[in-house]
Structures are given as C-alpha cells and as structure tokens.
Image 1 (cartoon, rainbow, N blue to C red):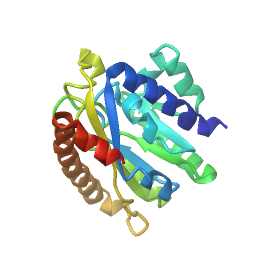
Image 2: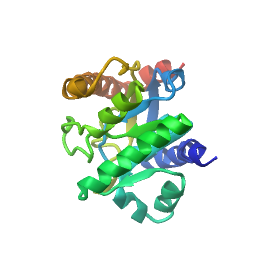
Image 3: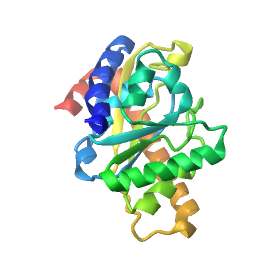
Length: 225
C-alpha cells in the first residue's frame, strides 16, 4: 500500500492543483506510462508546481526522488515522506550517494518505478539545466529502461514561486522507453547527454503545440478526442 500512495494521492491532488491554477492538461501517449514497468521515469523540472501538473503522470508502485526541502511543506510534505519517497540533501554529497544506493536495492527487491527530475533543481529559463548522473547510474545498475516524461513550458501559466498563475494549455508527452541493458558505466555520460537532447527536442516541439492550443482551443478539444 505504501508504494501505491503516490498514485492514489498525486492524481486527485493534481486535479485540484490544476483547477486552482487554471491549467488545461493534454497528454501525448499517456498509455506508455503503463506499457513499461519497472522503469526510471525522467521529468523536466520547472517549478514547485511540477508535482501538481505532472502528478497525473505518476505510475503505480513508484518512488519519487526530490530535494529534502519538500518535507517542510505543510501537510503535503508529511504525506510525501510517509509515502516512501526519497528526499535528498543536495549539500551532503556522500549521504545522497548512500541514499541512491539504498533506493537502487529497494527498486530491485520490490520491482518499483523511480520518478526523478535529472536536472536536480528547477530551471528558470526556457531550456534544461545539465542533467545529473544519479538517475542514469540507477537505470544502468538496475537494467531498467528510462522513460522520458516531458512537460511543456509553465512560464506565464503555472509558476508557483512567482505567482505566475495565469493558466492555459499544458502538454505532457511520454516518450518511448530507452533501454539500458547493454550499457555500462563507461556509457553513462554519452547516454545522459543523448537522453537530454531527446527530451529537449520534445520540449521545444510541445511548446509550439501548447501555444497553438492557447490560440485555438478547438485544436486542444480535437486532440483530447
């Protein structure tokens, strides 16, 4: 039950959060969330709003890796912690590495998915920050595929930190799984950069699509049917 908590909580929480922010959400290939498990799901990090926007894309039996500060958010932080998620103190590198090793063992033992934002912190620009290695170490060590889950730009729509909550269309695109079984540590940097380039290209594509939905809501309606 513990590792189902994210799925059952973040879905309804996401519906509430999106209603408050006026976000209209569309998915591209949502079925891929269920097609490949267990896996390492990678998301782009833009705002504290991410979990509200992307919560619907959290698969069952998942552990989310997030920064330690989340536990200080009233109510939400408490639930996030007891759901079995891993909160890392980015200032304590050795401790973070130990925690990542523990989660690797738990993932293998319980067949859990991992949900992680490989940038490590939110990007304040319209591009991605460099990806950290941790998620890719885990994927290669477990042999799990990585599944990129990209959210279109929240700028001008749903950036909680600046109360930039004007709402609008947001698109989440789930890409095909990228296998890691034939990869080793020597491949890590090249693999990390390749995945980042794939995700960034999709981010730019769906930003244009979201803009077209904002200017022509009928297109968004057709996409949902």
